[in-house]
Length: 156
Image (tube, one colour):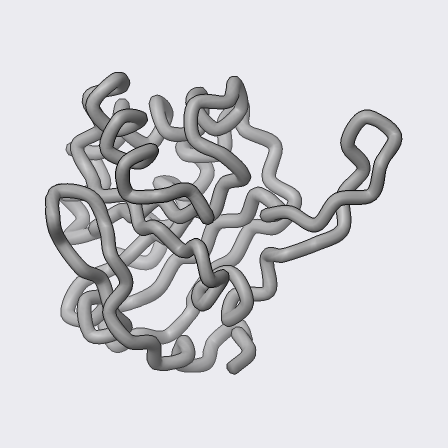
């Protein structure tokens, strides 16, 4: 399973998400979808990114687009993170790195002088037929959610 721009995303079975929901590749059809991968719940960059997508959520909805945040954190951690910041969208738990691997976001990173394997902050925009139409890798948080929204506006 690999991801390619302007090609259908790989099919994947249901993964657990917040609010006792599950998300599969079938969930990502019939409307636009944003999947934003982030390293860890309740860290500064991940919190800011989630707050930015939350702030713009109504504008994404108006363009018939759903948003999902994804990390390797547990459902319990996701539920706490979502509640703490009143996020209006679901967070997908990917502890086995099913989606992280399919979207090729697992990378070696330097952390405090050590090499560690972790999630590279990345966002993917998928159209109504399940085709990847835009991607952002090595995301810098400031202004990113706004950029994704502008790209979606250009496609709608």
